[in-house]
Length: 124
Length: 108
Image 1 (cartoon, chains in turn blue, purple):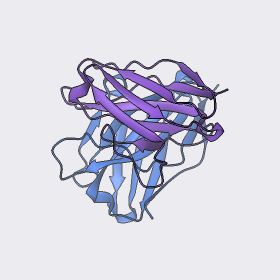
Image 2: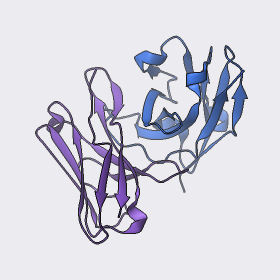
Image 3: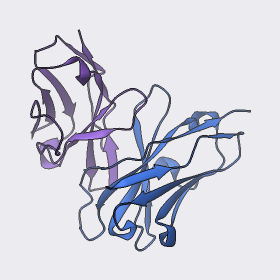
Image 4: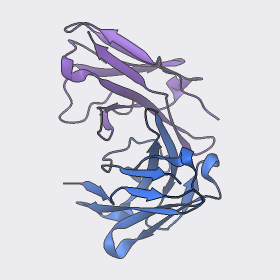
C-alpha cells in the first residue's frame, strides 16, 4: 500500500537547521508531487511548499522563501525538507503528503496519504 | 492571498447532523477537499473534489460547494467523529495550497 514514513523527532537550538526526511513506498516517487505541511502545537495546518520529485522543481509558500529547501533522492524514494535559521515559533509537527500526479496541469487534487509527522522542537 | 474561513467549533448531539462551513471568495469555482484529524494523528481526507468520498469513509460524510461557501455534512453523528476538520483548496493565481483554520467538532 502507498505509505510515507518520516524520520523521528528532532530538538534544535535557535539558529540551527533541521532536515526532515520522508520515504515513500508502494508507488513511484517521481510520479507525484510531494507537499510539506506543518502544524504548531494546538494550531491549524500550514502549507510550506511542494517538490516535483521528477524534475526537482519546487514551489515554496511566501512565508518560508529563503529558509526552506525541498530536495529528493530518487534512488531511495525519499524527499527532504530542510528548514534553516529555526526559531522557537518553528516548533511544530512537520508532515509530508502526496499530492497530484506530476503529469497534470492543475495542482488541485487532495493530499493522500500523509506521513506520520515529525515533531521538531526548537529550544535553547 | 486566498483566505478560507471556518468556524472554530461546532457542537452536535449524537445521531444528529453536523454541518461545517468553509468560506472563500468564489470558492464554488475551486475544488475543495476536507480532512479529518484526530488528536495525535495525521490528517486523513474524508471528502475530495467537493463531494467525492474515498473508499473506507462512511456514507454519512458528504460535501457540497457553491458560491462563497463549501460545506462538509456529517449525518447521524457518532462519538468517533469528534475531531478537527480542515478544508483545503489550490489557489491557481499563486499556485499555492491553502488550508482553512480548522473546526473542532464536539459530540455532546
